[in-house]
Length: 120
Image 1: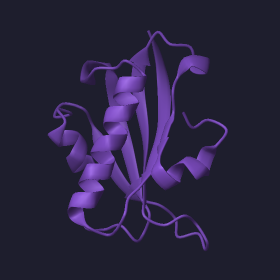
Image 2: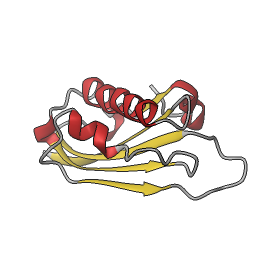
Image 3: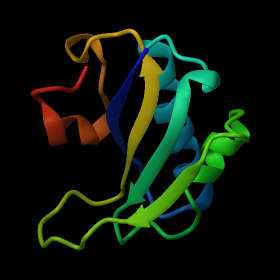
Image 4: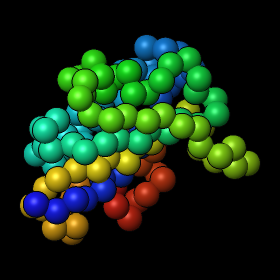
């Protein structure tokens, strides 16, 4: 098994607790499904949110999906002028036999425009 990092992001519709939780849950579920992972494969997850999203910690969505024993961290993105608003990002560290070229990074909704080179 190798340790790999998987990136992802989702743009949520607004600064609302439930929208942040729903968007984050959709993102985490898509990363897990597309890379054929279980929570036992996940080492840790770092979540970040743009400064305009402060109604809830994105990690709570992962906890609700069964990530009780996985270390999770939330942090804020730097407020770069002109950056895309309302974005939750993640970097998930996993154990997998997949080579880097087969890892599926996930960018959902408006966040797909962030990384057209690797978005699935």
